[in-house]
Length: 125
Image (cartoon, rainbow, N blue to C red):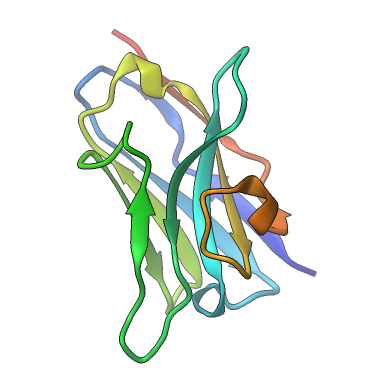
């Protein structure tokens, strides 16, 4: 049984920072691709960032243009967790953030097979 649980969401002021975590059980995250998606009210779920499975040369990562340079996806293999460091937050970053894992390293939701229930991030003054 694979389970993902997000944490770390909350209310933050514009320009502030927040770190989201995703704890995984039932699957070794480093052996799979991982990603973060988000969904704002009235909008479709969108890609945020992804990280590839770990190889002897390391792993790769990619970030959506809207968050590139501000957000960073990472993985802690010892804890079997995945994180999303969010800096310079903007009101438009307000959304429910979901972590996910799957075989393919992709920007597409269809590439991932297990999802967390989400954590709310609100950026407001």
